[in-house]
Image (tube, rainbow, N blue to C red; front, side, top):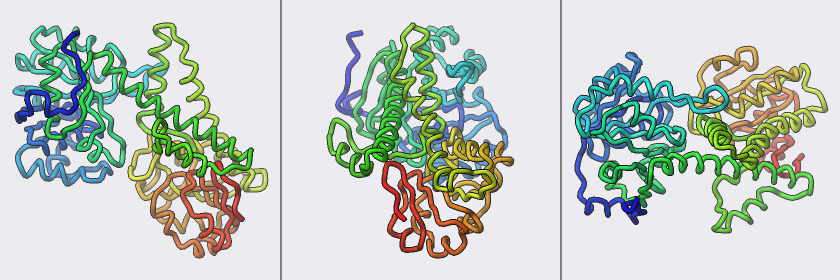
Length: 449
């Protein structure tokens, strides 16, 4: 395809001329709402659709339930400016759209492959309603070949399908959208690809224009590489403990190498969230489908599963060799700080393993209010970090919320029955805990008593 290219910036596309477009965003979840609000902030007219009438009503009133810095403000600004609107049902959103973004869930299905039921349902709903010449954009993470599949389901030669994967980190999604490392756009239609790339022209980001399968694979390749990096550093952390090394110094030493970089070199209780578990399994499925044994990625997943058990072993040893009847306080339940997302949280996975060994668990998380669905038999959630410590044999920090570093650790020590804090994120200052009379156990580092 001779037109494919990597542009130095989006301004190079279309000679730098930016046109406001009429955009429909189908799905007002995490990706859809961020996409819609940010595109509206760039001057486009955006209609976001959802199937939940209560959510549409709340969003239309500017009420954002997602914990994401800056998102509520962007939604309010878009509504006030008349550039952002929320409607019930995709059919109402697409009627005069020039570009339709598909931002619907693609959860892990049977065997680990992505479930495209929501994508196919929306296509069936809007197929005959799409304006002539509009562009359908797959923003959701979808398997390689989905753009072609959607094109066949549409059965509309006048409509192009484009793959435009998102690279949004929870807790910094608005920042990531408006300050992207790159924009990736893939399609067999040059004009459609450039129209979609031009939507982001004001951001001035490097742009990769390619075919749809390559764009679809970029997202999986990126997330699976990050998962491998995290599994690798957790393995190095275990090796550091066994060899008497300090993993923080090791990662600092390798992170200055520009070929490696500092990001994703923080050991912890394992990786999780809404993307990495789903995407690693989906890429395994894609590899299996073409008879490629992706041994490196399988090892990445296995290492992550083992890491959670290793954390439990560390906690058990800190508690004297048995967890039966031991009361533990857990600091953090979300999969990372800055979000209220509990999906595939390694903190919850560790909690479940602790409960299986007989531990009695009380937890606090700044992003979680009330009981966590599906865990009422596993953990009791309270609204205060100090309440977690009261009468506990020890504390386990599982999510790196900044406020945990500034707790009154002398007060924490006075409430605890035991003296040990297991810091699975190496988030706390061991010297602060030592001065409070507490012992500290980290990951990949030597104990501090």
